[in-house]
Length: 400
Ligand SMILES: CC(C)=CCC/C(C)=C/CC/C(C)=C/COP(=O)(O)OP(=O)(O)O
Ligand SMILES: [Zn+2]
Image (cartoon, rainbow, N blue to C red; front, side, top):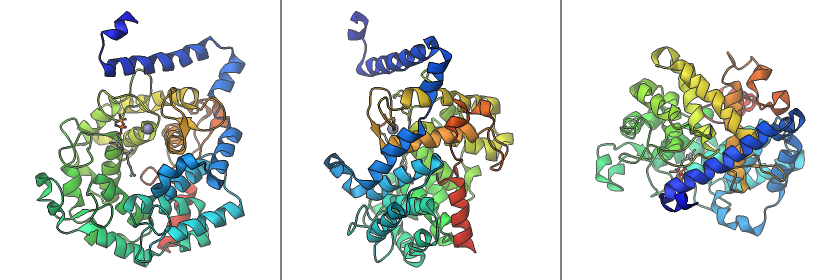
């Protein structure tokens, strides 16, 4: 403890996280086989109870998320789909009806009924409806109006709004009318346009240049030009570049080098250099490793390391990140469960389980799933983060 008083705040926080996580790992290692089996089990029933209850009713403490209600629907529905389950007809109809009331008459979705349409909640609403699947959910999306909304967000004079360094990037995307311009806007607009089959040159023009300008000296991608590389923004930048067919313009060697070094001794991933590991980055970061490995394996150095890293992160998830009493996952052992972390811990776990499969039709081997098939999760589409079956259904619906 005397040692602790001489270190910086960041070092102290890092020490405490390592202490918590290694404590859980030692307890795991000291347990007999039956207890170990229990400790790594996802416990589907508890997860589903937590998720279904959240979709039905939330406590008043959620009022601060009032502008994020389509996100809550997506986090919960996607987690349920990852667990291989679905909601009953009543919940499904209520969700479609609620998201319909978030849809703006001029296209896009707001954070709640009557709220300003925003690209982040538009992405969440579209992914939630794709996850529900079926004609009623998919046809509730007004694609014509969505197309107008996305074009309205495409700023032809973006340089006026923020820092000088982006004056040259005149064709970029805003999060909402008069809103901020950043890489999330590029990703959410392109993800939605791609899945709804409303993508065209007008929408994609200039985005590659903007995203390229966000790749930093470290190799990762920042939220806007000049900002620090971060896992969440690296996901957005990389996925967008793949969706617009410009991924080869990024420096993929340095991006990969940056991503693999974001894995800590705790086995989880941090979002940026010298910060703490957090379960949600299991998805944001590992997706980069796996996607690049699949698309660019021959052009990348250290391919084996990437896969080893992918496997390493399986060890962290179910044991240390599962909420202790009841369902849900959390950022790290000292935190409480929440729907965002449940969604992205499960998504990351699914990516790690399926990273080894040759193609989407080949199920993972039992040895590739920590805890065995009791913990099997559905595979996701890496660029949209919706379950593959639902993605395929949406593509069939919107492209034929
Ligand atoms: C699709 C979409 C909208 C994606 C968003 C991606 C995403 C997770 C971005 C992260 C944003 C960010 C800078 C968090 C840092 O928070 P922090 O400082 O609390 O956390 P840290 O210490 O882990 O960096
Ligand atoms: Zn997190």
